[in-house]
Length: 331
Image (cartoon, rainbow, N blue to C red; front, top):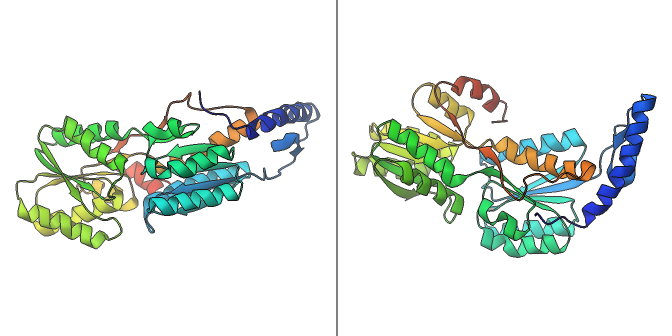
């Protein structure tokens, strides 16, 4: 069973009083919104604040979608969502410690480096602040005190990508890792290698320098013309790989993880074969909703197991539909 923070006991008790007011409102026809602490006011904000702390590189559009989802849920429930990110695990830990000092009502955290964040998360547990992990670190989430995890099964998603590349006839594939030490990315490549009917080699690039990443992929394709597939693990790197393939004069087929307006356009015109969609909007939206569901109704979601936001696959058949939402910044 997940660890239930003591601060939620008061919220649950308050919820009973709020329920009585809601019942009264049903009889009188007056709109009443329940809030924590057993009070209820028409249209009032909850006063709750949630901290979203991720391992984002500045400018990474993926995390903009996560943030949009969290803030949309916050606006719906009348709670505040703060957003901060840093790819350096020590700095990310410091951001968590700041959230603890601010006595937020919940922390939503991505765990590309679970070991590196374990101390800060232990401090959150000790401070009785509930945690939900997202994106990376599903396997370590419960052990570090989180209520649940929202994301995709990374190894499973990789297996799906490997199957897609095999169906396309790829035999010699590069798997492009854009964040050194990110266990989730390594799991994606391992899963793809597991189902690929051929060989796979990992290639390291730096997402903070996309021009250099593109040149690195291009150089690899020029050095070995037998490479017939490239799997990238980020939408911006996928776009860079598609350009590198053109510049190298290669026939390698490109698959990528994650969706953007550019990726859906390149899928539609055949430059990218597919994208693995982990629905980052949900990774922001659902944790805020899960926190609010407990504070207002005592619900605990997940049953000690991850809640999967993916994987799904965007291909030429459905790229147009997804592109509409990607253009809005929600996919």
